[in-house]
Amino acid sequence: MFAIRPLGGLSRRAFATLAGVFALSLITLSPGAAHATDEASRITQLRIKIVTGSDDLRTASNAVASLKYANTAGNHLVTSGNLNSGVSWPNNSTRTVTLDMPAGVYMGRLVEFAIQFTSGQPDPFATGDNWNMNGITVTAVLADATEVILVSQAGTPLHRFLSDSQTRWATSF
Image (cartoon, rainbow, N blue to C red; front, top):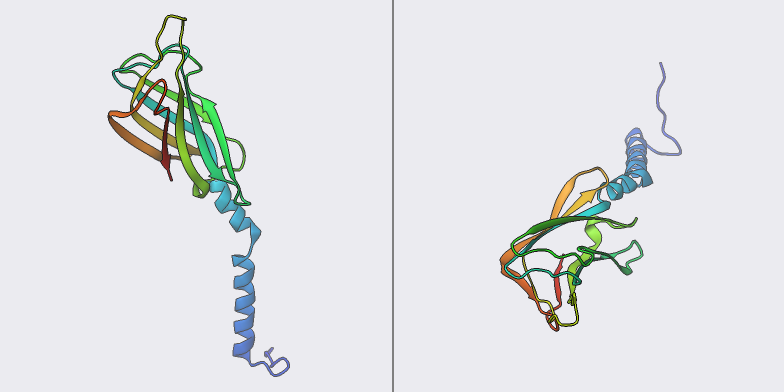
């Protein structure tokens, strides 16, 4: 029969405690576990659903979505995409646009989501465009295909964009 003998004055209990602490530290400090958590919260796409109210988004006007986030070094970065590409969104319509996200966008690092409106004029005789946004839902599609609603707001209108003022709507996380 084998027996455990004290090593350099360590009792069996002290040795077992040290071995347990060592094993626990290996599990806790494993870089694989931290990486798995980050990967699970990585955003691959944003799905943006916008409800236009009683004043349309005219041809030649643009609505650009932007997402401000912090990278792993803590620097703030912005990714953006044109939602309508100058195409008209009629009164009381709903449009859904999906934007691919760059690498490095994670749920816990989001700062702000915004819509920037630029009034267009389809011809020289047209007046500046105004646009009523009655609702917005922004859904994050994560790396594992899980979907998380980031923004869900509505109003009549939620925001009225004017051709020369109130051209930006934003919400912080």
